[in-house]
Image 1 (spheres, rainbow over the protein chains, first blue to last red):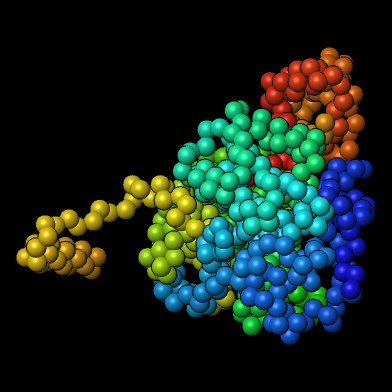
Image 2 (spheres, rainbow over the protein chains, first blue to last red):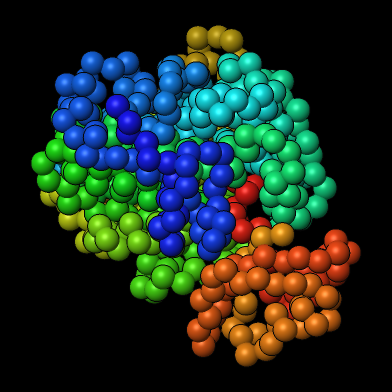
Length: 422
Length: 77
């Protein structure tokens, strides 16, 4: 089956053969993988997908690879949790949490895109993969490169905290710490990717890499019994995830995998870095770059490349967007942990807090189904909560000391209950 | 060098690219642009001596023009 027709410019529509390129030579617009959906119709079915492995590769016919998966055989197929407690707390009848905080192997949705990118890099014959990242992407590229036995170069800003480096260094990449501003590091990496014949996952491999995000959407639909929810709340950084989930929904509709898809896509961003949500709120397709100032570092992209496409996905679907403050983000993390036992990073806190706001504002009606997209694990960034968590009870090692402490705790809980009932 | 320039509202009416060409001896080749009354961006190719390119970009930044690689968000979380 010839499913891939190469690449196509998202702006001027010019076609290119499949190659490790990402920019249209004519208009400098971004390139996207072009599939032959006619060839896929009837071949990609609910049954064919169900016969696949319990990973992102069950959707391989809808991914831009031609051979077998090289890495990431256990990536994806993360839980879609039907929430009782958080649903009750938010006052909605049907709420689900798509939980990529437990995505194998590096605990974020980036494993999906990187598994596709590294497989494609192998297909193109590269012996080195690279990326520039301050967090989840770096972890995932280093891990998958190790699995693929490829060399890897990870570029980071020199001032990155040590805690964030360990989760990358452990996979033994070449870590290059660059002294300079964000803009300087950004430009250097673009120049490096131009000069060296490496698979820079989010530069020259970007058209393939970003397709991996579609699997997040396919899984939600399949796990709902091939039904599309009424609402999805998606965290936005570069804007690619929400764009690709929306693409996945449209593909599933076109291929007859779901009968009717009227999902409203809602964008979630921090107030300290929310240029996409600002576009949605102001109803303009003009993105004004911002300088990030938020604790949600995993969403801190001030000039997102896919901002325009993210805005368009929201508008086409009839969705909306919301900003939340750093305090609301922390409350969102704590709320999800307290109600569902899921510890997410700040991006997840943004999504939960935005969901709450959209429900309270009536944008998400209380009787309609909603999926909250959780994309990363809280254990990577525990520092954001350090000032908010109560200390533990400390006692001497005796039963009587514990009895007294327990009585004190019960008394305090009673006082608290009285206060709340007043 | 392929870059994206984002202009702040107060610079929209200035002949920025003209000065980039004339004062820094840089050849520009505009591929896409969207310039309105209150905002503007231009995607273009810059060619010239490395030293001139660096000086030209520093001058742009001094004018408050945001200069990004055409890919924009290369360093990501």
